Length: 312
Length: 300
Image 1 (cartoon, each protein chain N blue to C red):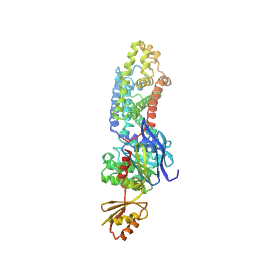
Image 2: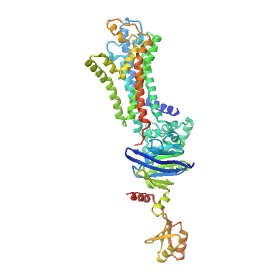
Image 3: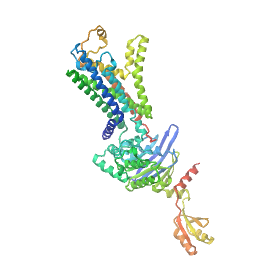
């Protein structure tokens, strides 16, 4: 195993009685990546996270975090990794600072470093004003941000977030996403589970799609899209002022172009690689006006739906 | 170790800040004080003429004919409530508030959570029991004016220790239910149910079995599974030096007061009961461990 791999599972299986929640899962996440773990409810996302943190035992297979086996050395894993559960709770009758103080103490921080670290992370999540308020008065979004602060207090190498944006308002979601992105900038490897695809697409460098305990796809959004929707090709969208048959014929002859589809005034050109330069040249030679041209972007929604429509 | 201290400190602070503990300790301390004044007044009235031995200890035991007003009875009644109040939501309360997932994702061993909570609870019980015994001794000393002898002080220490062990048992039982049952209300009910069963039904079953078989021994055997009986028997042996042991019962009824036993002999009589109490506590604890250590902790 290389040093770059931070999270790894090998043939991870978890059964609940006869129900197979996670089935021979193999995945690896490298250092500094933001890994989005996608899948419908009940696909086994949370179960996998729990196994990675040693909060439940796998039926078979291994889960390792930073080289430590999550089942055999959970304390070491939890020393290096932070976890924000889906329904995070705090001691309602303690203040934000007191709650984080407890976490810091459990992580063995001294009082002095804890105090410094806590004011730093509260500042970061924008809760400095609420530091001395009891957590019972906090909104759901604020608790979620406090949860992120709680994870950051221990200065983790890896952070696991289970549905970090579930049930909070759009502004809150933006804040949470920005914070997670910020963590990644500080070289923290992040693994988050979600089914809010737009948000995942915004911050994740890599995604894994889980269905009924199987990992059906793993890679960057772009890779998955190219593979699944465009059949492994780069697709270029060209909008023309006046599409002509002559031009289409010329484009088809460009080396590397696999096919051209027309939709009104838009051409969809499948190619082996990015051929925008060549296509622009052909169009210019033909005296056609290009309104705009871009490489087709794949929405995670599309990719996701495609995977699940195939499953059925 | 650091983790244990962190859990311990937090739980201790929580115990002393919680409204339920404050209310309960006011009742216990207030009740204890009133009781002492009552008992002491009675002792003074009776002129303490019967015997000059162990006058101070009588503060804690004799209270006329009414068993209900004796200090040990009071303790055997309130300590279980205290233990249950401190422990009934130890684990499932954390689960319900969503804290358990967060707590167990910190770098501590899982038993640290139970150990820390148990330790904090025992210390809380100890503080309350010690202050109660101290308070009663102080007021009693003021009222009857007879200082305790060295042996009496030792006996009081032993009594305090047994009371703390007794409290620890109820705490461990409450924690066990809080691990086994997922809802706070259910675990509270289960603990109280056990307490009522032991308090009311075990003696009843004992006496029915005793009268049915015509063997008095059976009742005492059955009572041995009851922590309340264990506590009652052991503190009787400690607090009443002339406690009628099995073979002197007949003497007692002829009106002859048996000679008081020295402390080590009293301890010998109380020893099996004390060990049984400790064993019952350990049993509850083992149950909590077995269940909690390998349990899946899911945040819903």
